[in-house]
Image (cartoon, rainbow, N blue to C red; front, side):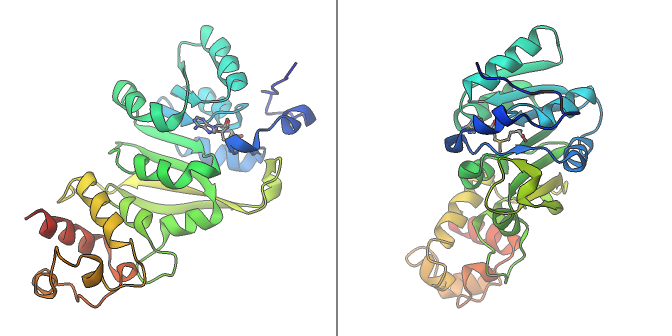
Length: 268
Ligand code: SAM
């Protein structure tokens, strides 16, 4: 019988580690300092969603902060454990399913102020593209592989700057909260991890998130091509110049505001 060690005062049991499912990106956080930093980013009493609670490193700390919490978990073992806990805890709700399918409905019904999660690595790109489209009043605190976190937090001109770096800036200011070595997890991943904190910048975006997403997808389709080439047939050099963008630039050289101007020009 699978045993879930929820007592995070104790280290993770050997059996939990042995039963980690690689296919679900299961690397369980056991670094107490990191757990405390992630949980304390969310104010006490807030309404939050946690993606992938697993055996509950972050979950327990969030519940201890009187956070009204909805967890989304795909693994049957963890989902049924949290469903049992929820029977005696009215602050906790459980959605048993795939976050890629459940997230939108969950956000619509829970109306969270915050979203937290030590994200399954295999989903981090597409999941972040979804997450960045929610305009939360509190923000998000999310764990990634370090390379993905670097991409998300990077600035124009950097080699790793890409579509996600633009999308997350639609509603949020982005900063790296901490970096963790593989040993902070059981079982240890092959790479370092990093926690990203996204807090709302409060500016009203000039285009919709969907427009921005479509524009960024097309604009970064060929990183080595100029922006003029990536939008050939839709926007000409003169139109780029009219919106203050040198058409010879490459996609990784354009900041968020430039992408919005392209999105708006495409619309007309
Ligand atoms: N929060 C725990 C921690 O920090 O120790 C576990 C984090 S582990 C990296 C990722 C968690 O996401 C696992 O519990 C895994 O079962 C869950 N998960 C993976 N894919 C999922 C999906 N598509 N939908 C919902 N949960 C998923």
